[in-house]
Length: 327
Image (cartoon, rainbow, N blue to C red; front, side, top):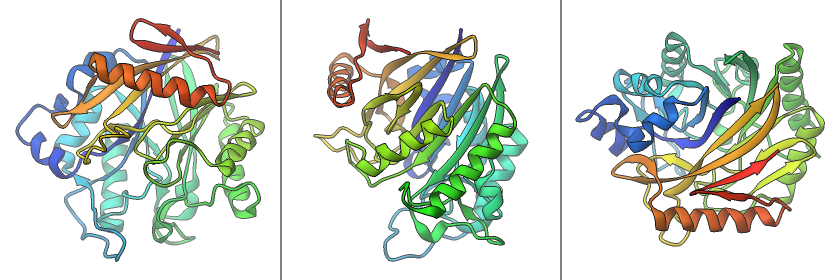
């Protein structure tokens, strides 16, 4: 059995960047460190750039800029075996194209695969490939956040689309990327999507329709993120759709009702090249690190995920403190 871990937003800048200068590189992983190391593969949304260069992107609507010192951040990713990161998001160009180039360079040097941003539109839309435990996995990444970061034919940026099956450009760009991924005949195909506004607990009708189209195109797992809170899980035919995986580690202010500090490690089991189950391990952010959720927080997350997913006909089983979904 191969165990693949998917996590939502990992933002290593600001207060976390300051704290990490005073603690070990693995400090951000809290008491989850051993659990993450035991995974066969670990995949995240990297919600910042890794660079000491660049200047903040100036825009009336961009009050936040995230970047982390690569001297500690890259070893921190390596310390738990991060295999791939999504770069299609609304913070990867916070410090401009130089910082994006640095991020890509540091990831390449560390052997960490990535997709969703690049020096050109073609590079941004290119699939990434990793092999873990003998399993060949392809990733395609797109975002509908921050159109000013969109890559052009000769301009660096993100793989930007409007996630709507009625938009020809979205279908063309995403479809072409999926086609390139499928040409490599991977065992699993993952679509990682940074979509939608903050603090929304349910996907839009358009996103659900897009997920169905992805299933028809042969995507095995939809890895959603962006809302800062987790959303429900749906199985469309044989495609596992995690609409939003929430926040995994960051320094964001916590909403006392929606609890953006609580989420899960989304652990996908694969047997004989097929998805076998999804295990959700409740997590909680405190002390600028991710931890196994304490009892009250974990219970809240489990009940919330049960309610959100039941609307899609998804029924989890309880196993100790986790949720389990046979596939």
